Every structure is written in C-alpha cells, then in structure tokens.
Length: 215
Image (cartoon, rainbow, N blue to C red; front, side, top):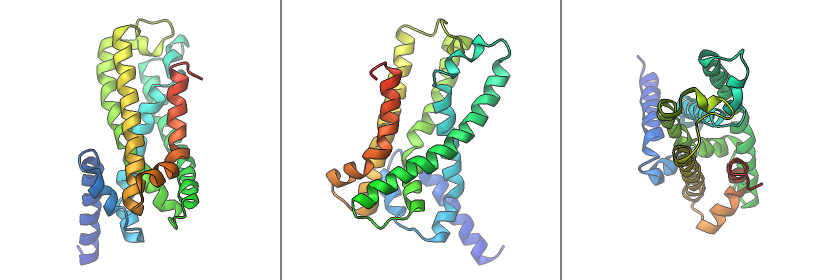
C-alpha cells in the first residue's frame, strides 16, 4: 500500500470515529470540519452517507404514511423494510441537498464564505442524533409490533407518548448540534450561529409541530 493510500485510509477511519464522537465531544469534531480541502472532504464522505441514510430511515419510519402502510393488504413486514430502505435513500438525498442549501443561505447571510459542500457536511454531522434514534425502533417494534404500521392500532397511550418524547429529544439534540457546529466552524457568537441555522432547523421543527397537531 502506498503512503498516500495509507494516509487516506487513516483519515477515513478518523472520520468514522468522529461520527460517533460528535455525540460526546462535538466541539472537537466540528473544529476538525474547518478543513475544507478535497482530501478531508473525501475522507468523511462515507461516514456522511451512512449517517444520512440511517437518519433518513428513522425519519421515514416515523411518518404518518408509514403509520398506515399495513392498512393496504399488499404490504407485509418485508415490504415495509424495503419501503423504508428505498424511501430513506431518497429522503437522505433530498434532505442533504435541500437543507444543505438552506444552511448555505443562512451562512451567506451571516457573511460566511463557506462552500455548499462545507455547509452540507456540517449538516450531516449534526444529524448523528437522528441516526442514533433508529436504535429505538427495535424497542418500539417489541412493544407495539405491527400496530406501528396500522391506523387505529394499539400503539397509543403512555408508551407511545414516551417514544414521541424521545423522538423529539433526538431532533432537538440535532438542532442544537447544528447551531454548535456553525458556531465552532466559523468561530461565531451564539446569536450569529443561531440566526444562520434558522432556515435548515425550521424543517424538523415544523415536522414535529405537524406530528403533534400544532399546525
């Protein structure tokens, strides 16, 4: 293996590790994101794809559409799994570029010279808590089973409220990481970082509001 290939492999492993460490030491991880070189961007590409895909699968499983898939007799658990994987891939692609563009707009309004790629990468690492929320789904399935995907099922009551609260906590965590990421990468004040993050943060906030019937 050449020296360059070995160096690239080490850099990629470091970014896989940072995808986990962002939950514990986000400041250090976002500080590393200041490196906008092509080499650094390539090294973190695979972790970013994995994070976005897992986050998107968790999101699509929690949609109202998923909550009534088994009302259609053509659906079964296997088809739901395929639907979640395909839907997650499509959602991840769209969210990555659309929300990344919204973050870029916010950054530019804050007089940053960040690139579109850099904005997308900040967004991706801020999404790790939402990817982590996918771990709650095996527990939800154990508690509620197929009723999670059937309207009028037994997935209501106290258990449902707990899971909804956890889902909200993960989204709030992700939004907080987004603001922190913008602040650390650009070395801005909290108000300036918050203002730049408003546009991409509005999407999950509105989604939560709709889920709770507030809008």
